[in-house]
Length: 91
Image (cartoon, rainbow, N blue to C red):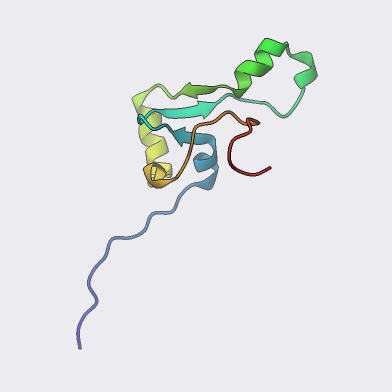
């Protein structure tokens, strides 16, 4: 009886991390800023704008951790767009 060929295990993606971090076309790991859903009336227009911008992830340790949590991030079709922009996606 022939034996099954040994294959590598598939790694599970940490879905929350996959939604929060994106990989740009040039290979930069980017993220959006923190608490956006709450108490926005107390913030200035500039502060609200800055929360929507994409920022590069700096620090080698956190980059390595994100790549462990999202091993297939380079295979996703993730365009780094600002949330709320009128790009392709859910409406």
